[in-house]
Image (cartoon, rainbow, N blue to C red; front, side, top):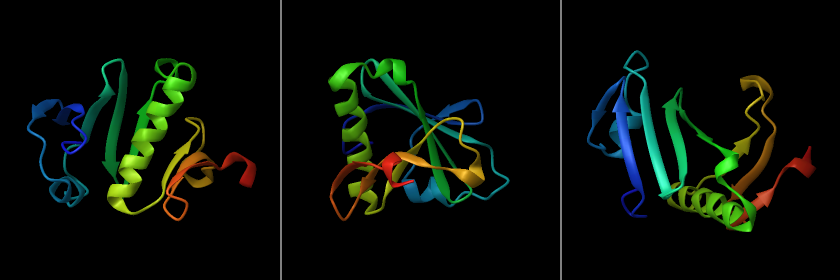
Length: 121
């Protein structure tokens, strides 16, 4: 987030805090207060990240991603995260249950780009 220059707000429970190092956030005990990280990769698009249970879930309001410019913003964020972590970053439908997630889009590290995954089902 800092390297990308994105605007952000970090919360532990309902208290706004300074953004700690990722290792500190990801190594918090399971019973610690919920963490919420609000990120604006551009001024009119907010993404909300919630690290928990060894994963980092995030929400994005698709109404904020209009046209090709919106698709490009989403893909840029997925690529930035995936490249930094060296891992796939998957986007699933909001209505998928935890046990039956079916990725729609995702950053594929081997291809070094976002790929459509819905047709792989």
